[in-house]
Length: 310
Image 1 (cartoon, rainbow, N blue to C red):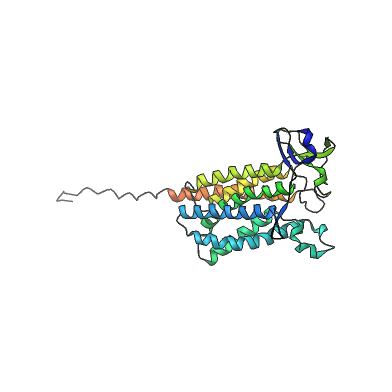
Image 2: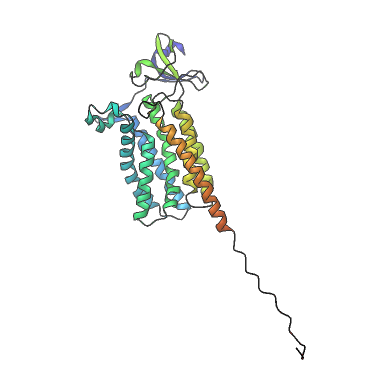
């Protein structure tokens, strides 16, 4: 393995897996296409497929979700960019035109989630659909897209964690990274065959596997839920727990000002707590509705008085 280390860009050394000469784009008829965009497009299509399948199984019109996904993509991208810009304002305040430079990176998944949820809410109200049922269905597609979309970070060699020597440790060719990409890395450089690597947590992989687990749970409970909105709340709780843990490992956290507090960790904790509280309240409400009201007991019959002198 070390004999060809100079050509390795991403290396799971303990697992014996190496990726050589990673390319970020390819050309078709002179038009450059980024693998990052291809992965995102596949993620959207996969999410749409899952959402429409769930819609069919729950008696909904799948066409609604084919229409909804168009609006969700548009506003999701806007939300993802706004979220990133707001919490990384120092990077944009002196050059506002960079706010519109999406090719330079800078999209936050939570911004897309918030914008997507608001879009689904408004869309369902406009179409006079069951809003909670739409949210239940949409999050099954959303978590599918998140599960696959994280592999775009792998291709771009970004959004990784701090140093680790665990069996999942991922080595990245330092020469292929910009200074901003690993500015938060405090671990050692590992030199193999004259090539410097940083060795980090593959947080993209952690989140992808966590999202897969959440997706399986959501699909299992889709037919077993006690009330509309339960799947949406399970998503908030499940994804929020995983994101809270994974965000704590990352070196590129968005912080609240100079507090050192990670925005996504705080938001994850808030979503988990909110989801748990609403879950308990709505389960109690559903349980109360399921208990049939007791039939009123008929008044006891009075014995017929047969005494003629009464």
